Length: 145
Image (cartoon, rainbow, N blue to C red; front, top):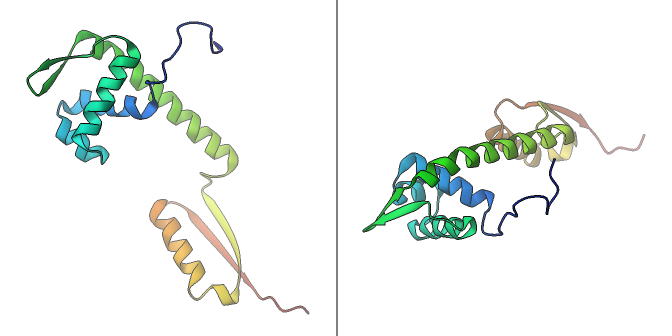
């Protein structure tokens, strides 16, 4: 594993978000469609691509009017960008799994007084975000006996 400073430095202009924008553009070849897919403005997509070129210190696209035509460098970089994104996603998934974030089961202990409104909303929200989540609800009271 290389430490920072051992090899070519990665410019601050090269970010994971810009790599995602770049890969989406390489797939779709249309700024408007990419902007709709990612929930960004077309101007933001164009700026991200231009900023990525500046960070790489080499052109990725040829401009023909309002169109961007990928150069050989764009196709070569796309392969590396895809691997970088995949590696980062795998790392995030692994860390979340280790911390219990992606656990398949959630156990909730609750007071009876919270089960009418609060807890059902929480469970519904969780199930919408992660339909495969198995939720186990244990009810109790706050009586001191």
